[in-house]
Length: 509
Image (cartoon, rainbow, N blue to C red):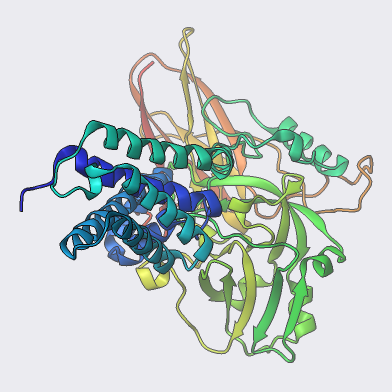
């Protein structure tokens, strides 16, 4: 058989694009979209070593690249199905209309198998079949040759499908991905949260390249190509396992409890020594301990397994959850979807992977188990490693150099950051920011003198240092914990247990 004409193949590619766009029209950027379903399948099929390398090497670009690649696979899949279906129809002597119907039916069935979303599958099949139908002889003619008119008509169907998708969910997805949602729809922080955020801003150092004490761009890492849709009105949290009586709480019940605002820092276990996956926010919610007490946690329970709406799960010692927190607010606003709305867990001083988003269950275990990332070779369930970041380096015309960043040691706290400008031979204490405020009752009056008092138990501190330099030199930084323990110098990679070691950078005045 003569190979298909390139223009004919372009018709089938247009049909694939039409299916992808048509399904998006109904699902948006959710796990029900065919592209996301393919992306999730790719993630499950990747060897653990490849997945670990991708997390470390690609960082925040890994997810967009995965989605783009999966979109290409989806177009190829549905375009290929259209090609096979037309060849089968022609070979069986089917009429042109029957062949077009077969194309749409096959594409719809494949979309349904991927997403189990009948309406989106049907719409995708209709768009895909229409692209083939309007391709005329370019797609269903007796020979594998294409005419220009048929190609243009098929491309037009794909463009209509893309335009229809872009009129709604695509725009919302792009806005969500770029953080440009309609600000008018986002409530302003309440007066108390605003005062706490203003306090944090006043205590921050203004350093180019380094975040203020409350991060302006908080990192996002999860196992999904698209975040799950969780209805806050239907959401519940269950406490199960080794308890006296299992208990279930909905969001309204949690909100009736005594809430508080807490400054807490999160660090991803995949964060390099001088990486950007460490950030701080003001969280609003309630402590976990009262819920565990009400359920009657077995004192012999060794561990807990936190489970999420996206089927994520992580296990860690029960003792780590004693100071845990359930957050439904972030920086004075409702918790964003990408950070685990409606409720996420915060486990002070521990790697980000056990701070489970979209939390649905706390299971108390009598024996140790294995969590999601541990099954893939990571071991980030313990306390974070101490780190001093060097994100600000500014040589000046007057011969001085300004350096700065953040230091974080989990609940152990940071008492000092030491800077060496000679490769580690001698050390000088840097200037530190004042500590962030401690937990504040959410019903406190904004003008209460106690607001802003205390010290956050699990929050980073900013640091800065200025010195004179005329020659190229190596700057090294290290943190000192509250009890005087100096951050170890030994360097480790993020995989498998988190990065540690001193950060160094060559500076040329």
